[in-house]
Length: 269
Image 1: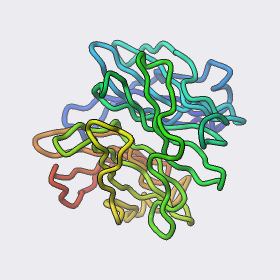
Image 2: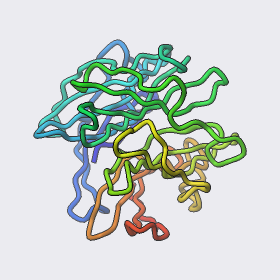
Image 3: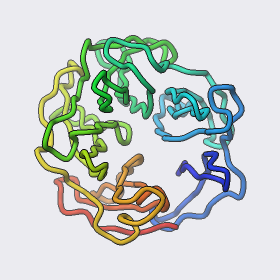
Image 4: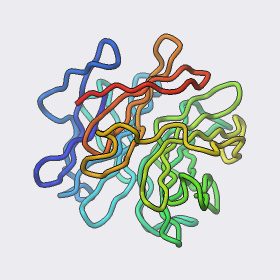
């Protein structure tokens, strides 16, 4: 697991932890990625998302310098030693984005000869919505839509924020993307979107209601209250393990059958 942690000054770094059962983790004592580049200074590195192609891991993350936040990329062969490749989706640029960029979730297979990535941007109405870009080399990305590929929905759990979660899954029914939504009170819950296998721009299905939300005390009370924020996922024995932040203070894991059974929770502090 790669996870985000903050020091007493509010600077974020990425830590590394290992587990034999997917629930109980042992952490390394030192971070594996710390802010060094100008676009990371003072604020830090956040929002890690992992994808692997061949023997190389690709890490998308947010570089935050307490002024701007931008979607960045790094690569590794062992998950502990990382090479920065820089900003891949700049802030304040794009077809509809007028603010920061964050949280890149890369599709695990090429489609139509291209890599595809869902990411977070800010629309002119100051709401955070989801964009889509494609690339031939994983470094240079071109925006694929003129408007958000997964827009906010008024009156629903995702009316204020629509943000990619873990890397998408390829299934027979389409590209399944777990995403994080927030309402106007900034209560964060989890939704599911499905995109077309041949065209990642085409939305096939979307949760009408949240499938997961803050219920336990440590999900409701913390640095940022009322948050469950899914960023990692793994399959184990016919079930999916979903790793998420609880109130921006804890890392927890919820499990669900692949057919969508009600999740059960565990906590790793």
